[in-house]
Structure formats: C-alpha cells, structure tokens
Image 1 (cartoon, each protein chain N blue to C red):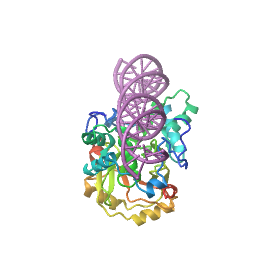
Image 2: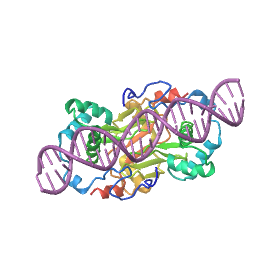
Image 3: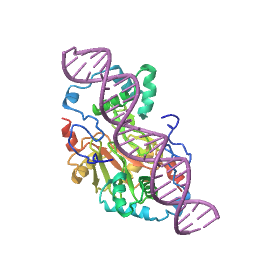
Image 4: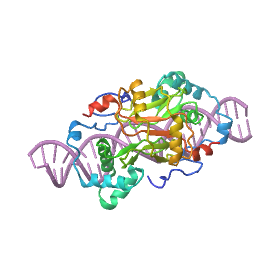
Length: 157
Length: 157
DNA sequence: TTACGTGCAAAATTTTTGCCCTCCA
DNA sequence: TGGAGGGCAAAAATTTTGCACGTAA
C-alpha cells in the first residue's frame, strides 16, 4: 500500500505489475493454446456469469494439470482480446461473460447477482455525456449498472 | 475458495463474512463516533474518489490511533447508511464518493480512472428495462459505467 | 532457437475478522 | 451494565508474479 497508488500512468506494467496489452498481442492475436481454448469454451458454455475459481474447477476436468494462475492469465488475455467480458463486482470475485451480443448488465451491490438487460440503450446520449465529462471519448460496447436488487432492498427494511 | 460461492443467500453473513445491514442500523441510524465522523468528512473533503488506504492515511492525522480495520468498518457502515457511495473498480481498490448529488460515474477498466458525469439519465427507461429483465425493481440513485478511456484506448493501438 | 505459454509455489493486494477492551446509553 | 464500536494483529479472499521448463514456429 505504498507508492503504487497513481492510476493513469502509462508505464508498461500496471499497478499490480500485470503486463499491458501490446501492439503485437493485438495485431497478431493470441496464440491459441489448449488452455486458452478450454477457458474460453468454459466461459462461453457457462451461459451466464462465471468466476475464475469456477472456471478453474471446470477446466480441470479437461486439463487436470492446468493451474489457477494459468486460468487467470488466460482470462486476462481473452479479456484483452475482446473475446470475453469482465464484470466487476462489489461483493466477490470478478465474473466473466462469453456472450458478446449487445446487452448490458445490472449488478446487485449487495448480493452480487448479475442479470442481463436486453435493452436498447441510448448509447449516443451516453457517449455525448461522457465526452462532455472528461472521458473525451469512450470505446466500449458494454456498460454495467450497479444497483440493489429487490430481494436485498426488502431485506434492508 | 471452497463452499462460499453461492451468491444470493439470505444468511446473516455475506460471502466474506461481513455483516449485513440490519433493521436497527437502518431504522435507528448509526452511532456517530469520532472515527466515523472523521472518515465521512475525509471522504467528503476528498472532492473526488478516494480509496480506503488513502482515507486511512488522512484520518490518521486527526486520529493517530485509528486502525485500518476501523476505517473499513466505518466505510462499510457509511455505505450501508447511504452516506457515501462505493465505486467498484476492475483495476484496484474500491473508491468512495461523498458527493450525494445525482451524478453518474464512468470508470476506465484499464487504468481505473473515474470521472463524474453530470448528466440527466433517462432513469425511467432504465428502470423499465431492468424490471423487464429480472431485477423486478431497482432501488438505486446511481449507476456506474465501465468503459475504456481514450488514453488507454489509444495505448492499445 | 527464441519467444511465448505454462505449472507451481509464493507473494502481493485488498478486505474482513477474532479477540479483547472501552465507553456510552 | 450490556451491547456497539474500536485497536490490533492475524487471516481470508482474490489476483498476480518469479522462475524453470517446454513447445511450437
């Protein structure tokens, strides 16, 4: 918890030391390995939202010698390549979504539940707002919403 | 990484063991303590988005004996009480926002930068969509957007 | 043969908790 | 005087990394 607090640095290594995606990785794509294929398929076949630990458990049935570190590295690579989507969660580990069709997520801050929203969003409005606010332009296909689901809301009353 | 994977359970303790907010805490409010006041003021005076470690550093100037655990507990209590807002971040610790005026956040997935968007959102549209999708109703005043900021986007090309 | 990917274990980071003590209501 | 809050240290949960070794181009 020392110096590594500044975001937005352009160093080759990110805060926790993970390597930034490079031209090569983007222009030439990923190497397709057994492990990455298995991780990708697992996320896609999860038909929903799955976390790294669960991916690890499932992939191990196919590749018993795969390590959790490799699963994390594969998820990161697939995320950077745009093949899967990472959903940040205030109440637990990151979740991964293999559904690349346009849809949004609504995430419960309290229980972590994630639901898909198949809604046509006024993205142009949002992008205009974003550029008015400092994100001079946003490159994104997905937006996550954080709220409180009804179950948790009523549990609080 | 064992059994505690099921979200959405209604147990008194959440996944990581943190206590759920209770009726009492909500109906009677929090006890106002030096520590909680200091944490709240620090978040409010940060005029932006501040993480727990930074809150700890700053609060220690006033209360040198406060512990990081207490800061986390205070932030959680203030968050549950609705006095501050917790911003989840894919690239670092959670950030806290003491600005309760209606505004949204746009968060860079890559560098963690958070910007405010002072935009009037079509909330009714969003809520209608949410209820069509399973979140039968959402109780929320804020929504976070996750995207890639221009800096990071251009760094990837 | 060189760069990339992997397995493994260890470390780093962030957050939560157990325990005991204090203090106010 | 009993229960909530706090200090401290330890643990838990999640994610990343160092290193040695393959492997495929």
